[in-house]
Length: 372
Image 1 (cartoon, rainbow, N blue to C red):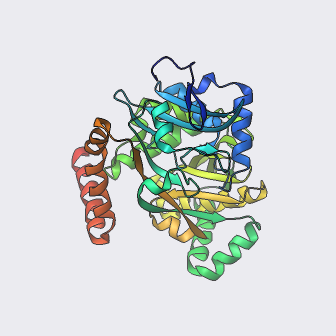
Image 2 (tube, rainbow, N blue to C red):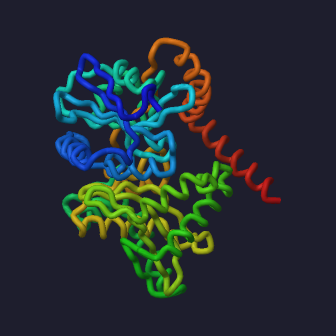
């Protein structure tokens, strides 16, 4: 909590800044947030909507929103989390795939004074949008997030795939037909509401994390609760969406993500390993692209991080940034010690494909040893 409590604003050169819990924003402030987001040059990613921040606030007690006023009207918002010693981070850091501030175009604001108003010594991000001019100069690394453009319809997208990767598309569609013949009629549900299907997906994903030697996100209670809250969220620009591919009565692949009117943010995909020979995850993504296009969605955001399935499906890439804004002082050293060594080590490995492949094999080997 910022000194003096959440209700008292701080007056700065740019105007007044009030820091509040996500659930304490008034409806006029939330509407202004949505209006500013609609006017932004950035894609309408649902991670940047007030509903996502409010959901994080329900499971992360240190979640905050800085509301920047210009006169009597809100002119900007910075959703963030504040650590016990003043270290700041983007809201939902570690699971949020789009980050930054929601600001009125041309707002005169310095990142240092914004952090000072929130009593933050730093503000860390790892999926900062490219349009975040306030913070991009402080980025340490640029990454690619992979996107699928279906704005012109699924048929146009599939035609592009047929021309670009004819073997991939032909093979995937053949596996889908074989799945139907050997297991049961293939059925796809774009917005499945059955809670049992979501539990199945989380079980598959946890098993995948353990199998590949990675940290199980669903072993963290706050992430499980966050997904549960978002699965029940139904807002025009932030709606939890569970997609399931069935063969007969059996779910064989599923995905949970968030969607706005124009963007489907892909988040947690997984499949039943028993059916791996049918590539159900790839089939699922093709059907998601088809359903999203039919719903008027223009873009599927597959997220940051290289993967073979993303290379096969993508139509393009967008930049996102990792780094931190740091105010001078003792907090700067604390931030460096807590984040920079690990970030630099990960960057070193990612930049060397042979080393990255060796690291992945090592993680899988360690996971196998833990299971024996």
